Length: 158
Image (cartoon, rainbow, N blue to C red; front, side, top):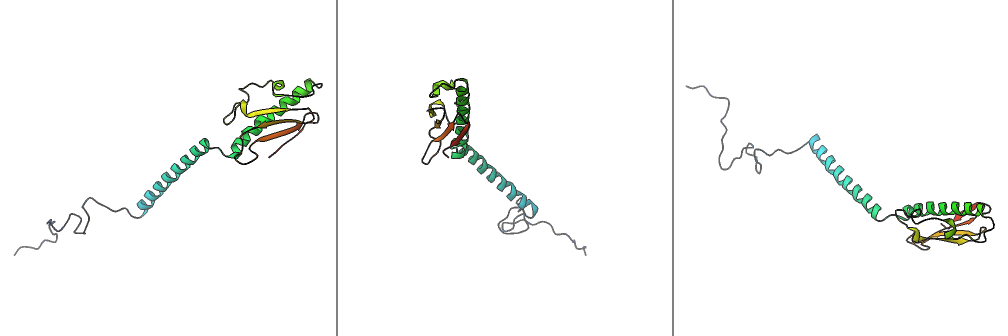
């Protein structure tokens, strides 16, 4: 008598696949489980969130909020007020101070959201004003600074 073998030869037939006879699987297919599955989910989630963050930043650059636009306008209006005060201190006999008196060129008021065409100013040294149009989406759409150039005080409308 021949000794019995403890190992069985691999059998392949039409009904059995190479994955040990499990239905629906192929021999090369393995499921991801445990830490590998969590890592794959984490990487996928990271990529989705990163893409959404990039899209949001791109949207913000193309459609700036009122706060961003107002910050640029506020800086330019403050510079105009400072220039008007210097003009007044050098020429205290001026009755009115206009945009031309400031000597500001188009380049000085050109920014990311506004150009020199958005700015106007005028008034007496005691009640001087400067305004930037199309800053806000709601009324009033402009940002305005009013200043007393003699005393050095100023305030914005918003």
